[in-house]
Image (cartoon, rainbow, N blue to C red; front, top):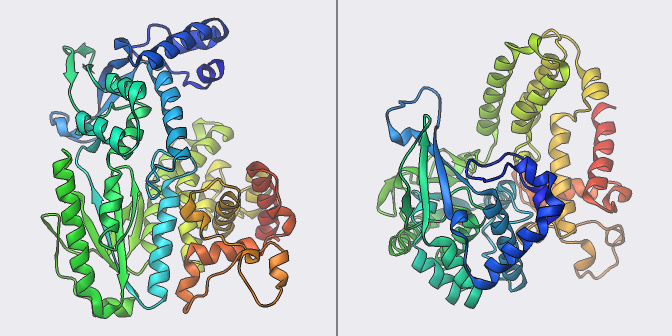
Length: 517
């Protein structure tokens, strides 16, 4: 319990009876009492009422929006910190139970350990690139739910937990108590509203709520797969895709429309609603094959959607030809905007603060999902390199055309853009080899020694991984190809690192020498 309290955020919630700094200072004294309270709650199946009250603060989504329109505000829910600690304990036990019995939806990557948006995108983009490489076309559809977390029906959720996931007896009673009789009050401009009751949805700002939501929507994966389509979910974002020969494009459209229609019907019966305004689709093919595709609108879940040439998927812009030029251009524009903002105050802050701001607002954007930039042409990654050069000059107050390589190497210790991509690829492979990645990533990393061969291969004893065969140079961009090639080129001493931190340190040193020599 002391460890749990120490790991809690230092910022207190407005509803907390004691500030968190005081609770942390007295953790060794109060821990036994909190432990007894949590054990009593879980054994009795009752959640204290004080843990089920929230203070909601509306925050304007973007500056410049009409402040008189309630739709322009995002509600931020603050719950009692002790209640969230109790949720963390229950969520840990529920997660362990689901993992032990393999009850989690495999292709749901949200709110689960060792899974991220990058993992999800790597899987989807890899499958589409390999399909295009084999001469197929693909149809990618992106589905979104309207106010998904707020409309979850409690009775349906409890029934699903019991019948589909085997949650019964006291644990089910505890979750029922956790969901029922919740209340909230709105705080705005110093004023407090009257207390009101919540009758549906999973609690916003909670620890357990997101986990319950992905269990509530687990059937979506099965519905889409029943139509022969591939699917990947991340919270309320659903990515469904399927490939075929160009002559079967009409069949592909029909299957996609039928699948989305079935999903929409399932949502309606479960008190959810498909967000027609955010539903998108895109044909994925080579530039030559796109000329023969029928880009007429498609009926998806009752709404007519015209295929786009570019869609936003989990924060990444994907183009119909699977090039990343659009995404890179968008990120570069955002980075230069942030750099211009930082330039206005650069003379007022020390180097250390400037470096922290650059890492937070610029470098993080460049590194986000850069595993998708494998084997990209130099002219694409050079744009990222230009941003890094500009950021380094800003940190140290240099002029536009001042030489920067020495500073990036000796003072900042930044890898170049291409090596940053290689670093991410190799890191994902290392995690996959050590059980720190989802199964859909691990399945791409097949050791040569596990493949039957008529003759003994030297690569089998060297610990190499199998590189899938591709028919075109385009297929080299797939993660299952580019990442494995990068891994096989690493020295064995680096591949045999004993931990993630040791591997990252050794890999960065290796790539650092490669980058600047």
